[in-house]
Length: 501
Figure 1 (cartoon, rainbow, N blue to C red):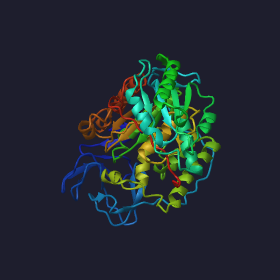
Figure 2 (figure 1 turned 30 degrees about the vertical axis):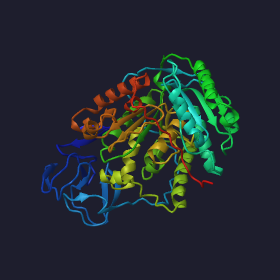
Figure 3 (figure 1 turned 90 degrees about the horizontal axis):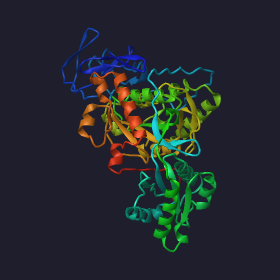
Figure 4 (figure 1 turned 90 degrees about the vertical axis):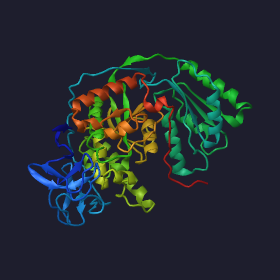
């Protein structure tokens, strides 16, 4: 038996049943046609070759009957399903409706109790009370026109030894944008500039773009160690950049100091999910989230469309009506966003998700929200809004990996824990620990994957895996580089919702 989040999961040799009420099980290995598996003393013949991670029926399911996984309804059978049949998109449909209307009621969130001792990290204390886990200079362009100049510049400079890295947060926007769309870009660039991993920030504009430096200067007037440079206003941009950079670097001299776990702000994200995501990596990260919030730290989770169908899981952890209303507003914003562009609200699973065994959005969402743990949801943040309350914060952002991860960084995440079943080389502009849901991926992509959660279904105790993950998080927080950092990867992406002139 494997215990995750206080629930027992029956582990057999080749498959797993996730809830006592479930009428499906998940293959942990490829199963062959006519292969016999046993569950609760019953022998089940697999009807056809079944890929790893996919579901099969463990009892007769009539047309119109509910499909149960995680002890929750994930869909409805569109035809009769026999024992041993493959259960997937060809015979299951979603039951989610766009007119979901919850009601507020007073509630007490479940208490999280973690017995593991609190660990300390070695970070960089900032004057505003925050703590970074890197001491970097971030160069943030206001417009894509200056990206080439900045790239060439950083290739020629010598990085001061007390600065961990000099990063350009390149993007193509900032000009030819209007209204709310331009405001999105403003918000996220300001949010990124406030991230504690940046010991110094240089905002670089061209001069004629819609996103003017004056706006950012006003918004960031209380930010420590920040500079502004307009390239059209200087004769030699490389000399001007060099002078501004080294001035910021001098002011960013710092040494690592012991910091409490309460100073850590992590973002949790899943991408390229498979059906093991909700069994191994996401519940493991959820336990880490509980460990961090129990000790006063902050966990940020975005991907609002991937909460669709699992809204009640989040609402059950909200104790304040104001936070509840903010959550409903952000859910409804994304519902309206989908319908505005005539897109179905509840058909989110990607081709990779479906290939990995995920059938409906609710199935995906129930697995996705596990990575935030069981802790109290203390706030809901708009795009680029800074996290100020410890606990679990929900952050405005889509399901897209790059865009939603950038939103987490823009709200203050100094590290990302990124779970994946399909694999990705992606690295955010902050250290990104990539956690595989299965051992096959970890073996196949060792240059991508930092931690293998697939061992949980191979006999490793969840408590042992949690201790190992905590150790890795503490080491990365104290200076150890992730696989993506070692390869020099870093990306941001900005949410887009408007015309380009």
